[in-house]
Amino acid sequence: MKIIVAGGDGFCGWPTALYLSKQGHDVAIIDNMVRRKIDNELHSNSITPIATLEERVAKWKELTGNEIRTYDGDLTHYDFLREVLKQEMPDAFVHFAEQRSAPYSMIDREHAVYTQENNVSGTLNVLYGIKEFVPDCHLIKLGTMGEYGTPNIPIEEGYIEIEHKGRKDVLPFPKQPGSFYHLSKVHDSHNITFACKIWGIRATDLNQGVVYGLDTDETQMDPVLTNRLDYDDVFGTALNRFIIPVCNRP
Image (cartoon, rainbow, N blue to C red; front, top):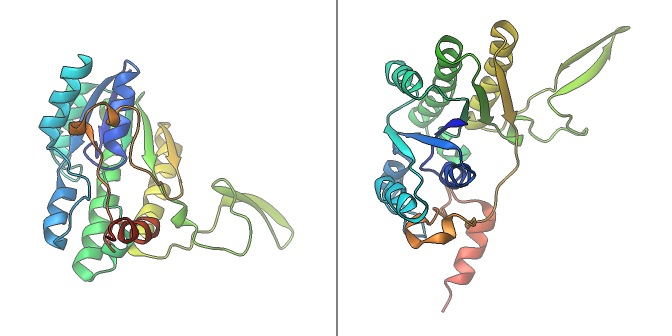
């Protein structure tokens, strides 16, 4: 298959792109490198040294013979996305290209607005791009369990049967997000559901929990392929923040 991995320079996107390439798929990456720029903004960094995307894909080709094409651009720029879709004509579009930190989205108004505009507008552009240029393309979109919050009932797989005043219906499970980031994911889910309903496109909305770990079989093939590991209080997980100080003690 021809597969685009948006956000392919990031924590989830990079190992996913390598895995898919190793399986024999024809992979292209879209990324605007904003995550690296945010490191500079926050005066933070990955605790693991990460090579440039150009160095990464060159090393991957050297080791495996598989080429991964790269496009430096932003999903919120529809002219750019349109040209990539027309050139690649993907069978699947793996969408990891969103601002992924709840704390980052809550810093102030500017960060909340950026998160919502980047995430919601980018995903809406992808939906329109698939509709207009590659209607048979399958969208795989990374959501989050944080869309649901912490209700006092078991969380269903997206939908719940409700009986109210003598009538029943199957409705989307109520969302109780806890940040502007999680709210952006809720908007994504609603837009994806609506697009599938009115246009008949195919999409898988993955509402996953926190992902721990660093290495995959592919990233361990060479130090240049190493994935990033965030440990700060904005992008690091609680587990990372507890473990890293312990590991760094003399």
